[in-house]
Length: 160
Length: 118
Image (cartoon, rainbow over all chains, first blue to last red):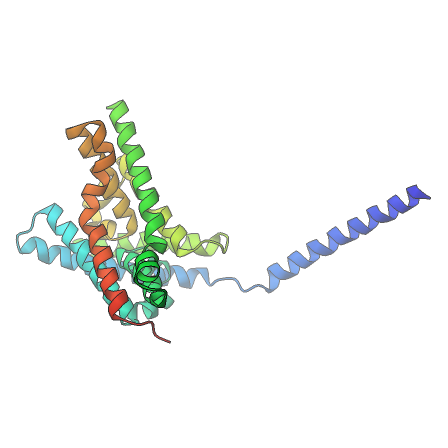
């Protein structure tokens, strides 16, 4: 009696597992797949264009007599300024819609990730709204950036 | 030629990020991508693999966030050379201070001056 019940349960479990697998397969077939090729080409074009603008600024600053290091730092600051401004004007969102990672990965995207949440949560005040939300994405980036660079420095100290 | 290389290399670096987003779990957010780029840039830089890319592509390698990781790592290494152990802690932040503060100042100004659309 109990044995046959146990077998029944086992069969039920087996059937459920099969059903679940079928369901998973169904979801996999129905779920829209991202148009990978189109997205990648758009990311390449938008990201490349942003880097090209950076290169133009860098070239101009060097032509004006800035040293390599100063020119690179000033270029980064100008690109951050442009990213912040375009985010405020609502233009960077449009670029991001097409560019995907092409608008995210350049330093202008870093500026966008700083401005967007701070602007969005302004109503929560200047300390917990703007002040804290500026670092929603920038915070983790700085944390891991500082962690890795310190580890790199320590390893270099030990092996040099 | 430098402009073409900046465009192509910068574009490829960004396209890799897009492939990463599209081909992995949907839980990958922009924050994950940016953290990944800074970390990868710093590690490649420490292995001596990022500087050649900067020499070839200029802004094409420094404007993507992996370039930020490169600046952090090189800052730490150079500071260790001149100041020893303390440099490991100070070097990265010192080398990137202008960019970080510019991001905070310009980001703050834009967030206060503008309001979100929609």
